[in-house]
Image (cartoon, rainbow, N blue to C red; front, side, top):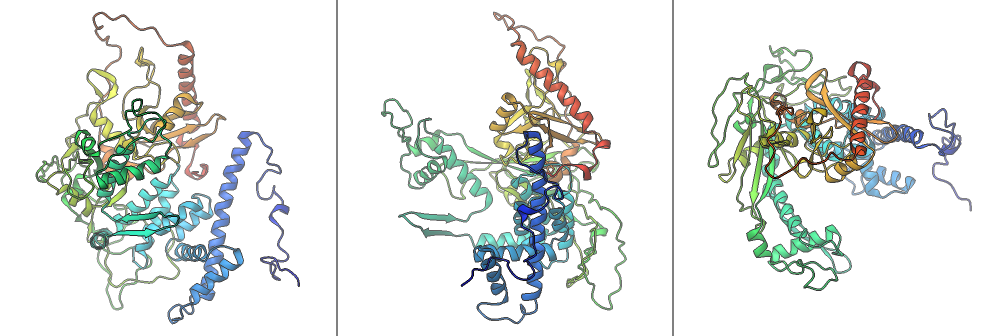
Length: 636
């Protein structure tokens, strides 16, 4: 008996093993024993190679699907149909599970038919393979729609922007593109999902079980906040993991029983041994969730421009004997003109006041306040909100599809609608935003007054502290921690002075301004402060309302910051203007009975000066004219 290796057929016997290939031909170093700087270069290059190999794998799987599945998929009624047999063939050959093989086939077909431009981004190393699963799954509902190619083009254009991506930012970007092209279907799907909400129990092994409660996103965010708030009521010597503490806290809230620390210290030494859930909920501050949207989204969909009334997708096939629609299809992007913006919304009802359409835009931040002891939908709500114009880009597709499927009617979008960003959850539809705004317990506060009057940037008594308006603006703009790859929501992060604030001489740098602040989670804030990492943030020379962010790691490599921010979700943020910080040269009156503090150690001052110099050098090196988009390193 002889053993046969995987892939030992006639066509593959001549294949050279990977280890025997010429590393130089692949652009790889001949040895892995490299200094850290060269090792990082090789890591980036190999990551791009992994993306190319994954694209090649998808192409091969799609070819197998075309040969073994497509000729029979419309008539194959067997339990083990052609798709199952094809997936089993792949699973057996590659020694993977049938589920993994089915996922590979599904993603391969989706990239080939629905997302060909995204597939090219994977081929070119622009996006990593683990992001592809996110893109494919979150665009599944556009399958067969005439605007699918337009969504594909929108996502591919966003992926090719210079910058880095985290999983949460990727989800936000994809959801934004889908919602903009599919406003009506999103509402219908949400209503169906609400009707199908459920509570299930699944019995596991070792005497454990899992419960699943399907609720609206805002209810889930409130419940999670209440659970984590109670789970934090333990001392540092608690032996449970964070997840285990949250599980115990959830059960305590449901059953109204006590929750306590399980450290080995006596009850007299640990004040967290017993926490009365009812008393804790009654004295705890209300939970707040934040929703960011535009005022035009609160007022409802607006008529689409004429350029969007006709479907511009290459997959669209007009009916026979149908004369062309008079509306022309302009080249490039079409921008939606907003309706007059709402200035304010009261607690009890949503009221609007018209202003000039060309007035300064404002941004909307919504909060939802709920007592932590309530885990159902009966909650007290509050919100702060503002407004800005909503714009939708109708981008031209790079190449038409070779096999268009067509759609039933020669129509595009009759209306366009905005979206909302719910902190900790992601993108929600405009209809969902209006449902939350219509709740009489919601408080909506506009960020800005719809004019060009600059908003205050700092607190009057302390130029180091940002104003409430600037604080909300920075968090709405950044959405997440701005460190590359971080998913921490900006609402749970610190506001960091990019250039260190000099409390003794603010003229040396570190102004409290929109361009001088950035959201960072506590870990990355400490890493920047005490580690040898240097961050920078400055206005884009080609678009001063946008920011360029960089992180310079200890070996000198500069990594670009987020490629997708709140500006891309809510363009009205571009129009919000903040005034200059107070003149630091104006002496502040000394407080009675206090003497001037001594300057910090010279080492700290030298570190700050070195970082300022390094930021200036990086800005010169990364000037836009010398750093074209197609010459940037992969965003991972």
